[in-house]
Length: 344
Ligand code: XUL
Ligand code: MN
Image (cartoon, rainbow, N blue to C red; front, side, top):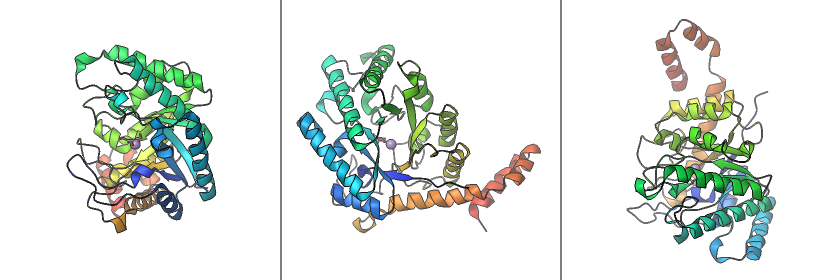
């Protein structure tokens, strides 16, 4: 029997429209409003940065962090919503101006590590052992300011300390090739899976694919999905869309390229993504022009597009496709895919 997928998004996906050249265009909403919206829309889980779970986390004591996390867990339980993952937000603090795990300042590296360990604690209290690491500022504007070799060593040290801190924690690397930096040390899924092999427990280091990040790396996200899933390493997913090699756009899933989106859903189906409890998360943002009354449309639309593409994947005429493939008639196959997507 065909199985169904579970869906997820984060509080930051109900965003206010600020960009580097203009202010917000929609009023902020409270966390409770966002959780209520998620529940009403019938999503299954919420993903968190550590400071989505505990705002102003750096100014709070361990005891206060525990208290607030437990309060959040109660809210989630009451709403019947799971916490999918927790990610340390390592890119806002004055301590991470020169990067986090690879900062040239040992005190700042320690800050990044301490914050990551607290993030594991928060995950445990929220009922998830999945820790997502998007490294943001681990790149450098100036190649000569850091040694790439040393940075890899520092990254491995940080991963090892997290793995040693909690034997159940699973570290999920979310690669992105650029933005906010021009380059990153872990730009692709290949890099994420390779660095896992250098750690003390490679089995507990996996990855998260974001469609836009793969596209920014010049790769096809469907190929990244097949690659990661060949290693059993795709533990989370941020579906969205992206118009070429520009800034990260976090457009609704399928917004730019329906066929690429179709192929991502196809890769997920062929690899049985979700069978081990993984969620389909949408890391999408409303367009800046979106009015407050359409605040949630990008999330509903992303799921709607996903489900419509899932129906297209499941009704794809595999037999006819195989005939075209056997005859090396890829022209015919191409048109068949286009007409299938266009519908009657
Ligand atoms: C940044 C990005 C992040 C991560 C979580 O491009 O995608 O929101 O998903 O830290
Ligand atoms: Mn993401």
